[in-house]
Length: 575
Image 1: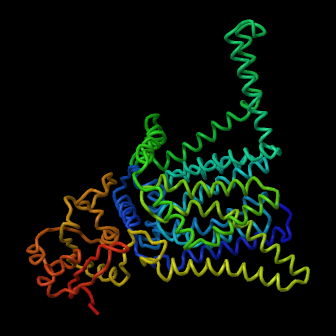
Image 2 (image 1 turned 90 degrees about the vertical axis):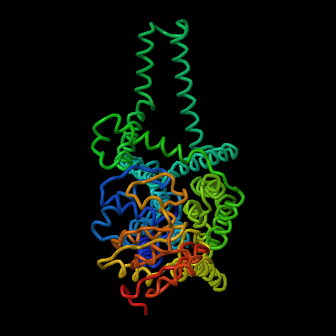
Image 3 (image 1 turned 180 degrees about the vertical axis):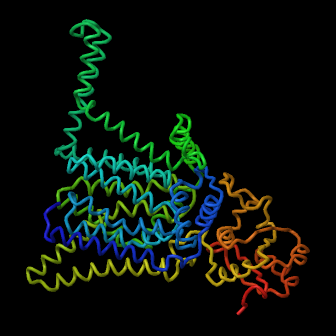
């Protein structure tokens, strides 16, 4: 750990307190917001997976982690909006503990600042209360990086398999775990380049020497194979000598470990990506294992590797506006911390690395994301929290220094700044996650967030809980050629697809309701089911034939799709 004034016990106590606060804000009223379309789609298929035992990896809906884990969560705790989000909330709530892994590269105050940003950043709080994979892949990737950093700092070998498992879990959540590796590689190259230009190469010189010697030895060996005049002894002797040199050198030392870690990575990913039923086949046959590893990655690349047609400027603008609207302190202090560390503290590699990682995430994700959504900003929040922590640590250190010098005004200003940062983050997190979690004016709400509430869901549950349990959808928008399927399908956006009803299939499946659709007003009048659902455009057509019903109007998206729910009066309390 860098020079400290707090002491290890106080830092650990602070981390535990921040983690407890992070868990509290993530689990409190976790079911407050109705399911987003993405949550409803995945949640429905998890319910059907739990029912049928059938699962096949489908890249368009991301990794298998939540499917397998939530299947057991639902089995133990039941399926609700809150339990569906519990795993993400737990991982997001424990995320501040990861700051401890970087204690060799940050001061005590910076470790606490890093953990604080991870605990109360409004973007991380909101999407930790959301059944999506973004917080999961960010958390597992950060954990993997932290374990590698500890392995390099301590020389303890057990960190490497732990990091491998964490990285494998990241890949089981979302394909953009690969983008983390790309961002890390780019950031590492820039850090190395700056060291070379600055004349203080350090580990870069060691790495370059190792690569140069390995390359020179390999070239000399290959020349000896090709030209007998260049080698000493017979060809068999030269081959044996070459292999001995490889085995006794760095390559021979690290290659078996790398192979072992690669096998561990493959075993973890195969366990998650293997179809169900068929898990045993994945571990007892070469074809099955290959399909669950390389085959799954080939499918992923086929879907996500081709790019997407959208305006880069528009998506980048959305990301920048999100930073400004809900993460301004973190973004501003990330710049301050980077500048302070670079020009005053002597430029630490880890801080610089995280700053570049965060910058690449800001400008890179608009290229690869398929829809305009605020959740992509999660991937920039985590790395930028490190230079932001440096900025906060500087303010705190200045405040302590002012106090010790008797400068009460300076100390007060420092305290006010720190309280303002925490207050802004806390108030913004409250507004976005609790006060207005589904409002269109909320800068974190994506288009697929419906405006339905608990009152409607309770009425739907009551209406379909008796002998009659049919929900009848009316009109072209909701009419389908097939009803919801337990199997994952590819063409989710095709017309007349049942996913246009999202997130309702998740709730109807939970309530045990059946769904049907029709284009005929006469069918609606004849059937008189417990619940009828149609776009508000059809109100004048249906209301006259639904005399004993109460109509409720909600939006199924954040700013559009006004939908009317007619619920028969004898199935619920209209009051």
